[in-house]
Image (cartoon, rainbow, N blue to C red; front, side, top):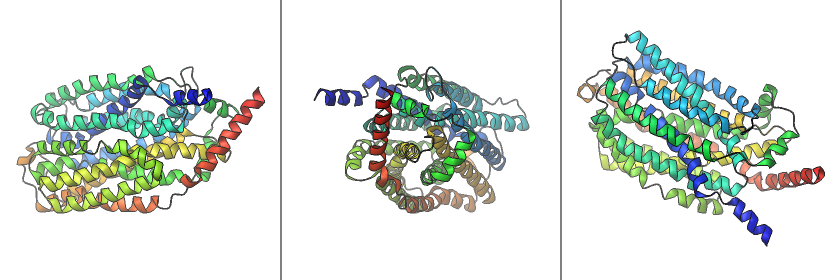
Length: 463
């Protein structure tokens, strides 16, 4: 009885640790939302050509995709006094410094220098700092927490914290953009204030959450150090990670199209109404409390598939909505709910993949598994940037500092609508079909039981 109480106490996370861990998600989530304004900042504030900007961002994201795999291996090879994943949390500082610099391009610079600056800062934000923060997550999680119930809580209830934070940001920020970011200096001031606050929030995880799970560390000590060869062994033996990578690819593609600001500027005719979508997304917050209960009755994969179906429905409604804010809000609500499982739950499946790797006798490779997911996400983001820029340019989009006052041709307006609705819907159909073939989750009870027996046996032999 006493042992059971002790285990129950160990499974409790505690409010300080819980919020410190999840507030980093607010910081990185807000940074991602800020990046959604980069394209319109470049075209409507700096007067840069949309096609050239898109290609520069694609170049950055191609570089970024490859640095993901390097970062994953780097994390897997890291062993410091403060842990394996924890040291990389300090990357949050560089992330926000470079974000501020990205939105602080001096007006006096030539167009060529502006293009170069945007490219370099975007590389630092995505290919360096975001990459390290993505690669360390799973390695940090399994060493800071020990029990599957804790992983579920962090991935579901814990998701509420960044979700609320980002939603509040999305409600406030478009209005601030309309009032403050009316010039280059205004953008710099707005992003600078945001960066200071979000850096402070992002550092709380590093400060308050140490790596304490010795079982994982002891299990790894029985194997040789991770090498580049182990990456090839992982790709050969763990096919399940590629299905998860597709989910991340599509999620990042749809969220990085950067077409929402164009949609509300040119189709709806008022960018400030974009805040309504953020308000609607708040209605989906209770879903984070429902999902843990759903997971007791059904699988993670089935919840993700249900989310895919809702996202498909949202795309269809967006296509017929036009400038109707009511229909756009309904679609925003369904789409918001639909993407929650894809954002919230993949970490549980990545941990399953790491357990599977240990089960079949290869390195756990949490860093590399997270990096593969990050790689897919960056490919999706790069593809989204390329697709948006190139298709809008091909459709005759007119780049101008006049914003909504600029007359866009009908072909450009139709392309904005298609990118906002049809393209995401088709991709979510493909994702749902892929997840229907995912089989690892059914094997996990046997795998976890076997690993527990192995670890207990190894520990008894040490004694």
